[in-house]
Each structure stands twice: as C-alpha cells, then as structure tokens.
Amino acid sequence: MTGKIGLWQQIKEDFSQPLKNDPAINSRVELCFNYPGVWAIVNYRFANILYKKGFRRVARAIMGVSQFITNIDIHPSATIGRRVFLDHAFGVVIGETAIVEDDILIYQGVTLGGVSLDRGQKRHPTVQSGTVIGAGAKVLGDIIIGKNCRIGSNSVVVNSVTDNSTAVGIPARVIKKGRDKNPMAHNKIPDINKELFLYLFKRIKALETAVNAQHKDTNLVEEDKELEAIYKQFLKSVKE
Image 1 (cartoon, rainbow, N blue to C red):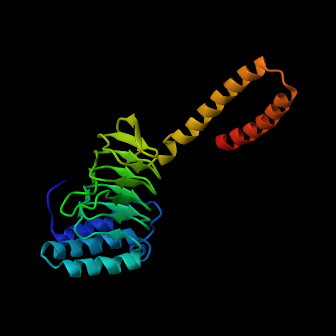
Image 2: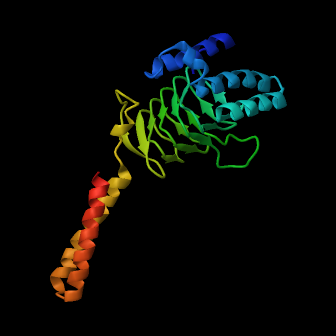
Image 3: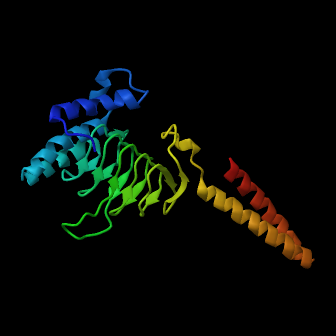
C-alpha cells in the first residue's frame, strides 16, 4: 500500500473517487445524496481510528448507524487503503480481518467474508491494489486476490488468485491471465456456465444420434422428436 497521509487528506481522496470513476455524476452536490459507498468509507475512517485507540464499542456503534443508513456493513477493524470506491455499494460486506489495498473498485453486493470462527486469526481475504470485484461476488476466507485482478459478477472465490488474472464461476477459476486494458469491461468475461451447457447438449446430441442409428423403435423416434424440439428451444434461449 502507498504511504500514509492524514485523515482529512484520505477523506478528500474518498470524495474524489466518484468524480474519477463514475461517468453518471454531474455535480459535487450528488456526493451528498447518491453515493452511500463514499459515506460508508468516510464513516469507517473515523471508526477505524477509534477502534485502534481502544474505543471499540463506540467504533462498532458508528458503523452500526452507518450500516443502517447506507446498507453497507464494514467492520471498523478492517484495513482499507486509499482511493477505494464502492460503486452503488448496497449490500457490500467487508469483514473484520479483511485487507483492501489501494485503488480498488468494488460493486454492489460484494462480500469479503470469512469461513472460520477462530477469534484472533485472519479469517478474511486480502485484496491487492488495482483489483475490480464485480457485483454480487463473494470472496471468502484468508486468501489473496492479487494485483490488477478482475473477479466476475456473482463469482464465489475460495482460493487465492494470482496477479493480473480474471476469475469467474462457482467456485471461481482463473480463465485469463494478463492485465486488461479496461478492467471494468465485465460484459466481455465469458460465461463458463453457458459454455458448459452448450458442450453437454452437443455431447448428448451425439450420443442420441448414435443410439437412434442402432435402434429403429418407432416410440423412441417419436420421443426423440419431442425432445429435439425442447432441446432446440432451450438452445435458442441459451444463445440469446
């Protein structure tokens, strides 16, 4: 993570992120009403200082109120670096021992969660600089998401991801290595579930053709025609 700066400088950076990362913003006034992710981060900054000074109940209370207002759950003990932007942000959860480094973009519904109940242990992920985490993704456990990674929307990540990688799926797997020119282009991430379904359908079709070639039973042929119609309709919907 980059060098430390003062609290007010950090907050100034936090408020600058929508202007840099969201083309929908038209005025600084909108920061007050339309960016709960910014306010959640700012509230966290104060709560984190209090938590480190031993005022843990006060820190938890601040983040409890923040959660009620913003619908974003950040533990005050988490480590969050500079220029972190929670875009839309509703439903984001950042756990107690999570580490979020600098220049990270997190979309709504993302969870940086734990898979252990052991107190005093690091239970949450470390997300390194330059990473983008798509909407609804779950990153679970004491794992490391490397620098400049892309995590596909709704993916469930339970293993570490190396630098400059794209990971998608349940559980998430690395499908591409190398830094993307546009890390926000989630529409270009391939749908591995769709591709798997297409493969299975084609495989089943090949097996059906082989079986029908050996068996000339009339009922089987009629049933095959019905299934073929269903198959074509479903294949059409998958392609669309």
